[in-house]
Image (cartoon, rainbow, N blue to C red; front, side, top):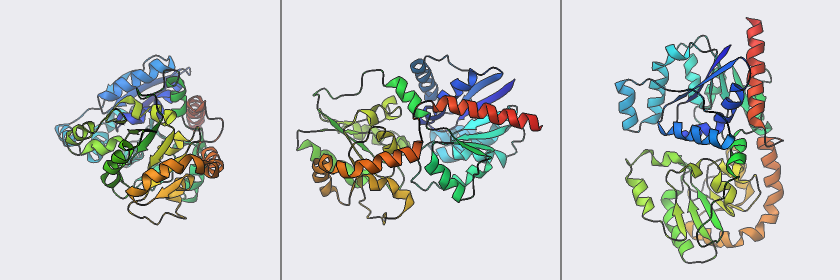
Length: 376
């Protein structure tokens, strides 16, 4: 019997990338899967995913937390909190045969004294953005990748090779396939909506300079609604005041989501007619069905030729808030130019077929652990 722990050390968005793999693995004979969570709300998301997949719930445990970890959590020092929690749970996690995570931070478990379990990463995101702790991928014993683009990137860095990694696709699409059977999101007025998906990273963020002017611009026209779904980490600071301030900006044509499951399960990326973004790789999820994209560059970053901004080649890039609305109204006319590249990069990012990554991931874990067991 292989005992495998799936760990969700960060916010609930992580479970949309790995929970379906956990369910598929639990169906394999000889595998016992337990899920560890940090945030209480993650449990509700896991249950929701299982309902949509028609899969049974799996055993869930909360990470043990010292007073220090709890204090860091209340102060929203989540990066520091994650490290403390992982260190405090080493002894329990060391009792498993494998630990599966989608957070690079979990790579530090090996430096903290983790000995017995094989450490497995199911990579989330779609690349095109420099991540400070991506070097930790070298600490994982086995890594499951979404597609050839990311594989090539990490192989060129020398972090991965064909023996310690495998392409499986993007498990989140399996979750979405189940979710989309439900009614898609629409505004009450029935008009198409544009999705603005701002990232939290300081060097990339655009919501501080573009959000209010974008809202004003959409208020002056009656063709599109505007839906704003920020990266959930934008709300780490402010102790809830920023959420309240954003909610006050909602109108019958503008809706700002500050924390619903639809921000995480691709409901908005599937239903929107157009995408406006900056550094988020969610644009690739949007391009499962190619549609017009606009990218914001108010900081006037030198992005051309930079692989971390490859997705900015998939739509018009505007540099001032005043240019946003004109770009919106010409986006469909210009989409014919961008669509072939959107289709090409989507395939390079996620491979083919799109669906079935969860089962492929579970099978790959079984094959890997089985071969490692034979070595010992």
